[in-house]
Image (cartoon, rainbow, N blue to C red; front, side, top):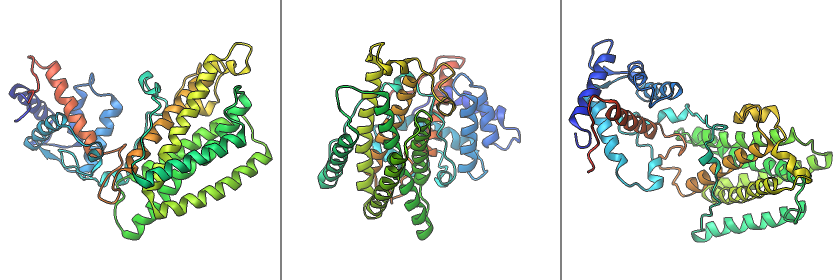
Length: 375
């Protein structure tokens, strides 16, 4: 072993032997879950179930020799200490257990909506500088759309009202839910046409579109748009949807960079809304959102709790938009036709993380103090 101490290896092997109910010297998904249940301080029940399902699917119901499992743990620990290029992590390498990438085609979990930590809600307003003509064109297009949209909605004035905010976010979300669906549809048909795997990308884009739609359904629960407003939405959806579909067929890279910059602007918008609510004087109707409850659909979707406020909702929505921002910028810099997988759901990387966490917990709770070698 190049990284794990001998005492750690012996303890892990003993735990594998104890869980080996059929005494075949191999570990399968059910046995792996039994091993991890001995480390509930490191793994939640939901994590154990997910890891078991990933392991089962990745090994097609098969098992792994104890020696191979231990080698995988050692390699995962070694990999964790090596710097990697950010996008390299999203290649379908299968992880150190070699589970393969077929699982990404049908398994996809996004469970943290509404389970944001305070750190995750503290969003930084980042900007990715454009590189090359295509990025500059995408940024220029976003800036142009922003100017037109601000002028049409009267946004940017010194005062901000509830009516302005709801009108803006409702219209914004009717447009924001389009790119994810278009990307998923195009990739779905490409997978059918070429008879190849997608790497779970279309699942990620579908979830993005669904997340934006949940934003919309929440905000329309707070404001019922007028008939004229609904007509404007139909027109913009037809125009933008058609243009984005054609653009995506021509250049997915441009489109994801465009969406990345759109989401940067969305983060700015929600940050301005949050600041306005927090700083609004008591006589300002906007201040009531510091205590006003949110619609039931929002409480259940984001798991905000019974005492949640509109201000809490705005923080959660901004966190969603920041994730879309980062993902689309990342995807735009990837070669999505070279076997890359969904950057939010790489089963190999998930299992590698599990192996490393398991090793660290063994070292922490073992009969003697052990540590990973520093080299």
